[in-house]
Length: 493
Image (cartoon, rainbow, N blue to C red):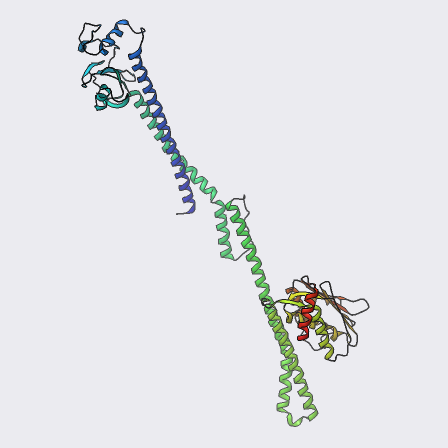
C-alpha cells in the first residue's frame, strides 16, 4: 500500500470516527433531553392529581379523594370503588397524540382503579414495596398493549400507590427519525471524509513525491546539481533542506575526490617524467661502462662513475621529496608544541656547517606553534636551501615575527610571470632548469603551511632578490617557562 493511500485512509478513518462519535453524542443528548421532558410532564400530571385545587371540577376532586381514602373511612361518593368515575377522563392514544394513563394500586398489588379499562399498567415488586411504605417514587419503562410507556410510581396515601404513565410514541418516532437522519449524515460524512482524505493526502505527499523524483534522478544520472525548493518550515520542508544539504556535501565531496584523483594522476605523470631523465642517464652510463670499459680511459671512467653517483643522488632526493608529499596528506597524529625560533636557528646552523660560504642572518622572536616538528623543519630547510641556491655569494636573511617567517635572498629574483607557479609540483623556473633539484621543495613548503592553516607567498624584494613569506596563524609568543623547557630540550638534541 502506498504512503498516499495510507495517509488518505488514516485521514478518512479519523474524520469518520469523529463523525460517528458526534452523531452518537447528538443522539444520546437528544434522547436524554426528550425523556427528561416526558419525565417532567409525568411528574406535573402526578402533582396535579395529588394537589390540584378547584380548577378541576369539585365532583372530580371528591371522586379522587374517595379513591385515595383508606378502607374503613367514609367516602364522599356512594358508588363502589370498582365503578368509580375516572377523575381525569382518558381515551386510547391516537397517532401523533400523547395521552396519559392513571392507575391506583392497593397494598396487595391489586388494581383499585385504572383510567382506561383496556390498559393495565404492570405492577412489580418495587411498586408493591412502595405501597407497603418502603422505597421512593421511581420511573420505569414498559410496553403495554403494544404501546411503549414511561411510568411513574408514587406513594400517595396510606397503602395506596399512584401510577401515572405517558406513551413514548412521539418520542420514539422522533428518535427513530433522528437515527435515520444521523445514519445518512454518517454515511455522507464518511464518503466526504474519504474524498477529502484523498485530496489532503495528495497535497501532503506532493513534496515527498518531488523528493523521491529528485533522489531517483540522482541515482539514475549521478547528477548532483539538482535541488528541491523547500516550502515552509515543517518536517517536510526541513527534510527537503536536509536533502539539499546532503547533495551539497556529496557534490563538494565528489568535487574534492575528482580533484584529488586528478592531482594524483598529475603527480604520477610528473614524477614519471622527472624520473625518466635521471634513470635513462644512469642506465646509459652504466651500459657504456659495461660494454666499452676496455676502450675508455680511467679518467673517462671516473667521470662516468661520478655522473652515475650524481644521478643516483638526484633520484634519491626526488624519491624523498615524493615521500614527504605523500606523508603530508596523512592525519597529523604526532603534533606537539614546537619552539619555531629554536627550530629556525638549528636549521640555519646546519646549513652554515655544510660550508655553503653564504652568510645567514637570523632574527627570530620566541615563538610557539603547534605542529609536527619534522614537517616544520623540512619546510624551513627547503625555504633556506632555495634561498642559498639562487643567491650565491649574497647573505640570506631569516626573520620570525608575529607568526610570520620570511626568508630573503639577494639573487636574480623570480620573473613576475613565474611567481604564481613556483609552488606547484615539479615546476622549475627558467633560472632553475640548469640546477640540480626535483622541483618539489617549495610544493612541500606550501603543503606544510596549508596544514598549519597558513599560507606561503613569494614576492620580489626591493633592490633585487626574492622574499618568501610563510604565515602561521596558530603561532603565538612563547612564555618564559616554555622558553626554558624548549631550550633545554633543544640542548639535549
